[in-house]
Image: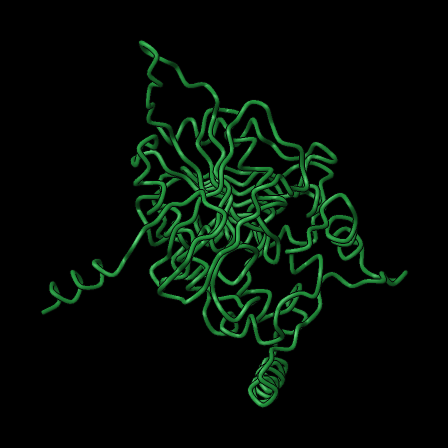
Length: 370
């Protein structure tokens, strides 16, 4: 009986790839409209080829991605050689789109010989899923697994050499994905947030009492009632604008990225009107890193020394290894925490301050995707 149920579950997974402008997702009764012009927040590299692709997760939600392919393709007797490449799936930050940070990471990795995709998670950007601007520890972890499904079936990808990169809030989802899927051979979490931890406790455990949590539950529950009555979902707002003079420095850093030409994108919730108020409800009682201690594959955590969020990576490292890094770079077995001197959270979003350690990531994936 168990075997037949499992087989039936496997049969339900469908994969598609498309480079057309529109792709109809019959399961979700939606149509993805994919922008074909280059609308990224960063310049296109002449070292890679780029195309749009789509694929479905196991919930039938169709995800949109930018694929970056190294241009080092040889021809034999006039025929292009199909070389099996190591591949990397990238997404994040939480509330961003693939035209921002994840695309920068993916393009850089492709410049160094990896086939890389930067994808929009479910309910976000050009990807499917209704209602928009929702989040889920399960579905968004599944998005990574669906990306691995897709990459595993590409003729120019070596299915035994696939890694993932999660940035900011999707760093926690990446670690969660690594804990459940052995096809993921190596994981990088950059400037990570643990979205469960921050929703449950607030920043620095500033809301870490039962009374405070119950108040959050009441507010969200009431908002659900109001949303149902109105037939719409109230948005929480993106990065605050105009920026108060007394805003914390990390809020100013977010503003400097999401609300200026440096990183603004019209499809990014952080740049515009943000998540639905009820969008993160399920993080309140579904801990992302519950099984991080059982991850057998290599994991590299990268964080800025001066990032307000550094403690999330330190917490994740301790969950995986039992060792408290105490603000320092540390390696235990095949788990590593790399602290970038003088870097704040958003320094690892783009190349503005040249803080992203691409060489380290290239070495990490080269060693672990053999």
